[in-house]
Image 1 (cartoon, helix red, strand yellow):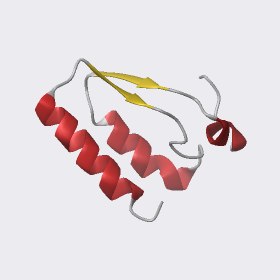
Image 2 (spheres, rainbow, N blue to C red):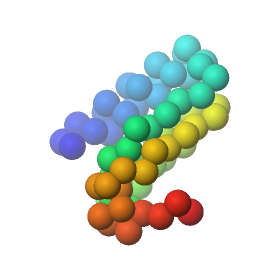
Image 3 (tube, rainbow, N blue to C red):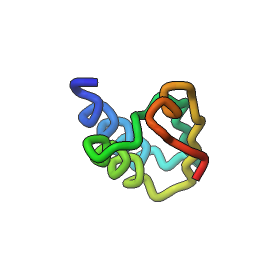
Length: 66
């Protein structure tokens, strides 16, 4: 997504302010490759409980439950 990092940061920044019990990524987050590290780092910026649903496009690039 051309502005995915910007949108992810806006979301995480908002969640830091709201301080929910947890957040959930509903999948299709990104392929597990170096150029998507920025998104993973943004997602990891939320220090609360995080959950992640693995969807079909996540497994296309080799993403595993680990």
